[in-house]
Length: 444
Image (tube, rainbow, N blue to C red; front, side, top):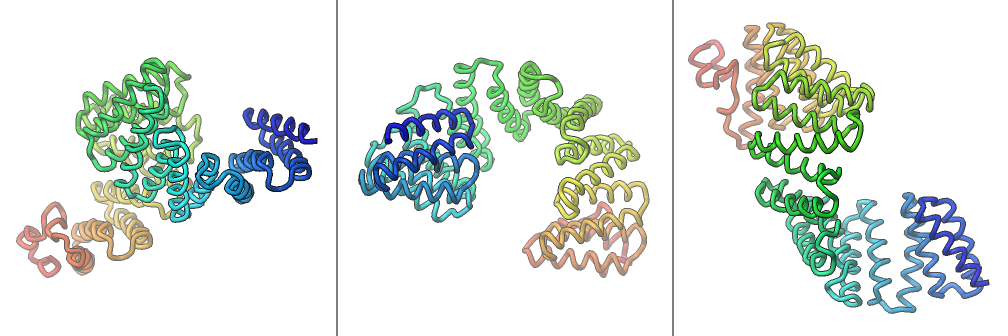
């Protein structure tokens, strides 16, 4: 009976809201079987349960099943309600989202635009559903790196949200944050800060000063002020972030560890090496405890610790932590990741400073091989590593290999239209080198 189907559908909805997706799907399937049998395949009640079942499949990542059910809903709704109905706009957006999740961007863009057109026709230009669609369009363009189009969509969405939502609504915070991220990527830091501070004001009013979402926005502000070189302001902000996060959870929390790492970087930038080291070590302790010893975030803080030791002249400790960093990176990222290259180069530099030239050369050559594999033989980064290798050959007095390394680096720079005076050997540019070391003049 159709009333039984309605009850089953409603029970399924309760299970869905509780996150009990298997139970929800069981109810929806039985409801759908009855409704198709009693009402026929084109009834709107069939469409409603089809949508609910599709939404459940979508929620658990079963995109093919979700797509099939969404399209069935779209067929029924388009026929029964017309193509400019709000339900047609909503389901079109859902289908677009699946294409988006599959990285089928052209199809997703087309359908998001169709959903926007149908939505405006049925709901008007100022409706939360219109804002939602605009934000999804913005997200798609952001992922494609088309920041101009993303910014346009986000700003239009923000205008709609301000017109139809409460001034402290969390959706406005999300859109402000998305706009701020684009400004940050463009290095328009003042504009980004304006957006973040507006978002922060809403969060403080609606959530209070000690909510973790407030800490997240403050952390973004701290990063931007750090990038602007305003280290004292950034330090103040991160201290507030640390207080909120510690109050909200135990000290052994990954967000606390991340904040400690950021504070360590700030202290390091200001030359406060002992305090920076203490902050990094506490971050490392927490990350070791919560993530284990083979996680990328562990490698990041190990690298920072090694760099402090190198900066303070403690080459032995620097080497120990760089080697541990390298071990973790290889386990977490694989042997040919860009982070591995950077660590190999730093280990090579430490060996070079200590006069262990054969060891230095070994690490630089390994870094070079990975860079060539990742970026091709004509990358500027390959040229810079060849420059480092040339420095080692110079220290060894190996003019033949010095000439070969520098000549290749020089060719890469010139082919790329770069100024070859940027290349340096043993602390001198190549013009100075030719004066001080005539035996290397042919290479220079």
